[in-house]
Image (cartoon, protein in one colour):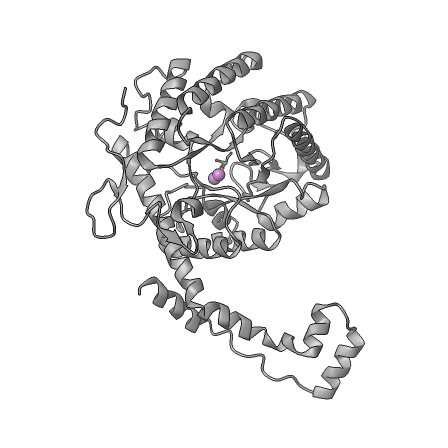
Length: 438
Ligand code: XLS
Ligand code: NI
Ligand code: NI
């Protein structure tokens, strides 16, 4: 049975199209810098926002009907969501999805064995329904923040028993990820942090989180998971202080505990801005450390200080993100729309408009980022800015072949250095505008 019956398959019609159900910029087969748009942009649907969230917030109940013809809380509903999700992805030409364990089935709060049985049943159903399609999992994760047992943390909990439940959920979610063909496995530390140091042993908690991650790597590799593990940094919300504050913090943690060979970053745009960074900054920090893995494609609101998870519409930011990603040689993961419709956008049509917006925004970002690279003015400027290091002394500094004494002698000889040269920010911002609007 068709669920989105009055919505057609979304095709590329070009920028002059006025058809609300067509792509204006995302042209899957168009080749940019040697690869198709589809290869550059492995888009994914977030099961939780698209198939589960109904607009409920702290102030009111849901506005959108996500029952898909079944009674919420039942396995029939879980299956109806699979049917809806597959039809949705096929109509958009999206081949990946991301999930938390409890997005897939209703959790049995009194018996984890029953939850796991339901997960087996639904993953069989997903495999059956996606057979013959290209649809597969991008990454899986365990929800270790919703259930009250995780109120003091999951890996960072004070309770050995709760720690066992975190382990059990990770074990199961890894099995599901492998079964569903996932490329990655995410740790987002929703309750891994603290509200006050008065009751918290930070070192103890971080060591336990690291141990859990080590066990996850060991188990995952043992069952044939060859993809990347990801940390998804976020500075706050729900906890006041979260341990994975930003990419730099998370990378330091991974190195401290010897996890850096198996883990990369999953960078979410809205989390970057909550950490007072740009999305581009977080991508750059990940890339220069060899840890650019995957992206949660969304955007925040500059006027609101929380994770609003809006569908990306900001072409400037998407261009800067794609600039970093192209320069890094692409993602090993993909672009997961960890984004939700605004509460009053409550129709099936709105679900499609949101994805068309997000996909077109990243397509535009890709087109413009490639033009920026081909234009070459930014690269030229940066090369020129550091050109003094092309000298013999510069070469020795870069190769660690000099000493403070040698450098101080040179300073003494110079008496005062020449002006280091303009940063030319306004010129470069003009170049970006010139490329964007040409
Ligand atoms: C919440 C996070 C979450 C992760 C997956 O802010 O973005 O949705 O992506 O657990
Ligand atoms: Ni988020
Ligand atoms: Ni996310």
